[in-house]
Length: 554
Ligand code: DON
Image 1: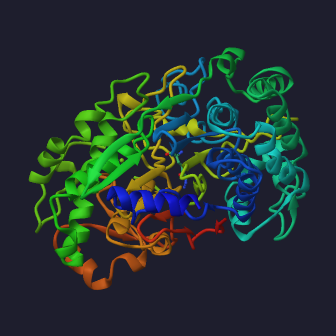
Image 2 (image 1 turned 180 degrees about the vertical axis):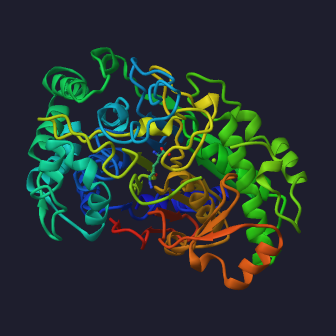
């Protein structure tokens, strides 16, 4: 009835009514079917997209222990339809207050391999528990305890080991074996568990229950906090009571850009994602991509990527510690300068642009996208960094700790696990957030909106870019997640690509233009997309075929 009235009123007032004002369905795309179901359960219980985001985040923490968790952090990009508020909840880990610039170097100033990756010293102060409480209290409709219920249930009842779980556990087997509590939960008799084996996490269920009952205090104070702190200390870590008292969630204004009639809304610092994405699109705007040959298109996209990643290496870091010139970097004039240095015929050698970064991508870390029927939306990318994070679990807590400290630059010019090197802006300092590439993003146009993101280390940004360009050119959700991927990140000066992304003939031509190429043996990324087509009044969602996720409408 309301719709008929609205339609009549719009007609009478001469308003364009072709665009729907509310989505006909809700949609959730996550990296794990159990998490997608958990989100739908929360929506069915009367929750909004933000409640569902809390439920999905906590459930992913349980069923994808190699990707994210309450021992880690993340970024939740929110859009509240009622007042069009857009905000990014920054629950990124922070360096402990006892951290120091050279903490991962030996007496001779050499970075000690593994120290920022394996074990208690590699862990930043977790932000996810505080972020979930903040999102539930500030934006949700349901009590935190309701939204956490599916995760607690999954932790008690267990989830089934999948092929991907086995790959990740095999990769991190050695490190997992060094933490008896982690080995007890994630291995079977100290070995990779077989397919179908149930992973039960009673300690994690209790910790989540404490969070549900007491909010923030359930994690950062009291029994759980004591166990976390003493566990970390006895394993050589440096967390203190003050770290827990001082951890704060930040609400940050998203990076905003414009590209050919679309609005790009993405993650601001301490993520490099939004700035790099908008810089690349600003550079590309000059070119009529659709009228270029596919070879020219690949070339200019690569050249734009190269330049944005050079900016990333030099300028990006925690905005609470360093001045990040976001406005200048995403200004069209800055892009115009970069455009002038691009030749349509020749690759620009990266070393002719100055110094810096390599990577490997994957599908640890996780992303989900949610749209509810009121039009509220969430794009969230969450991480404990490496598969199974630091592999260290303080006994009795069920909390697997992150190794996000490795996202700092341990020493200028020395690469991290993703091959990324950084400079002053991303040096370690007490209480500082480490630079991220996580890029939860909205793309908003006349036609509708897309909610997207993916894991994949420094390749996150270029995956979001390619899918985003696809969206502006008419691709649907399924085609966006399937799109073959290629990547350039300034240094090493190479195009990395999935074999289907570049043909042999294109490869030969690109080489002739001066590009170096490396075909990847493994596909990368795990993208989750939700689209609300306002003109067609249709919602669709898709989960990356490279992963084990699921997208559902409600
Ligand atoms: O915040 C970051 O940029 C990284 N910690 C993300 C790591 C990641 O995506 C791993 N996935 N392959």
